[in-house]
Image 1 (cartoon, rainbow, N blue to C red):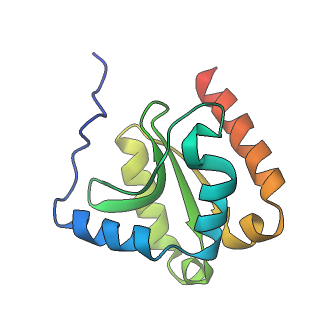
Image 2: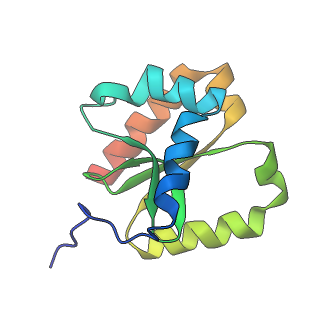
Length: 125
């Protein structure tokens, strides 16, 4: 039985906060969105920004691939155990997760795009 990801179970209290996050994106999020993800630029797949899933808000989400892209800023250096738990919970829900450091986005968006294309190929295989 395939799982329906069209109406993800999520904490409804996160919806407004996710909307605020979309309005206050980091520079790395803006660059990734504008140069790689917006308007199905990445292999024709639709991505959403700051999407609530479960008790979390993920940076970018593609329903069709069940794929999450997370960007890690400086704060993530200090919350590794929290990030690990979050990633385990999301993987247990059936999501594929790939992470990038903000610096990777800012310094070499071309390689990030190639990495994402390869990751999608792995998911589809």
